[in-house]
Amino acid sequence: MAGLKKGFLSNLFDVCNLIFFALLAFIMLLPFWNVLMISLTTQGDYFRRPLVLLPYNINIDSYRYLFKAPTIPRSYLMSAIITSGGTAFSILLTSMLAYPLSKKRLAGKKFFTLYLVFTMFFSGGLIPTYLLITTTLHLRNNLLALILPSGVSVWNFIIMRTFFMQLPESMEESARIDGANDFTILFNIIYPLSTAVLSTLALFVAVGFWNSWFNARLYLNDAKLFPLQLVLRNMVKDSSKPAELLIAASQMRDALGNPVSLFEDGLKMAMVVIAVVPMLLIYPFIQKFFEKGVMIGSIKG
Image (tube, rainbow, N blue to C red; front, side, top):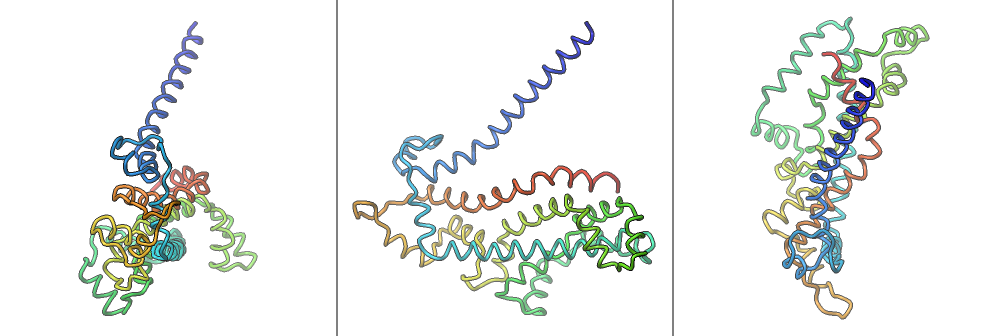
């Protein structure tokens, strides 16, 4: 009887757990679904029913408007360059820093580790950083100004260093006996064994680069270099639309040749969708590494 009761309670818990997380997923997905549907609905339907679960008439004029001129595709390209280049640079630099500092034999290991941790709590500040980037390094209107300052994340360094410390040293000793140097060991042995943590941290870094707009606003004056998030931020908050988009809107016609009527909320929702979709497409490819990578880096400090 006790076994049957225990099995019943276990199954009941599983069912309740499944229902709870299904409801939670629905609550989390509903706002994004509403945003997507508003971006595809017409102005009249939206004003009659602001909570749009399914549009009566599918309308893609907002997307046509945004992609009519080269502004949005160009900003997509800039964001892709910044995100891919910044992520690769950050993961490479952070791993090359974490690997030697994970070795007990390294002289001054504690000093360098404490020095890095110190920068998590105390930074140079916005104005000194701005002067360093623009005056000392002369990187104004240069995409490197958005990549170089984010080269090393101390938090990612700590996670990566903790992971490297858990790898058996016998593999490195065997490689050294065969004549491998530190770079060979890092790239040919450590990296293949660290796919989970590297992929997880790469996802975090990529999302940060993709969503960043503040540094671009500080260091870029050339509109042709603006990343997607800065373009969208200017259009949503400041209601400033690039001249190319205004020309594109004036040239848009429906099937009967009449000017297309666009409404502000539909445009804003379309902007949100095109900004979010790339990260949603990337996530499924990294999901299998996500849970393992997060747990491995947090087992011991």
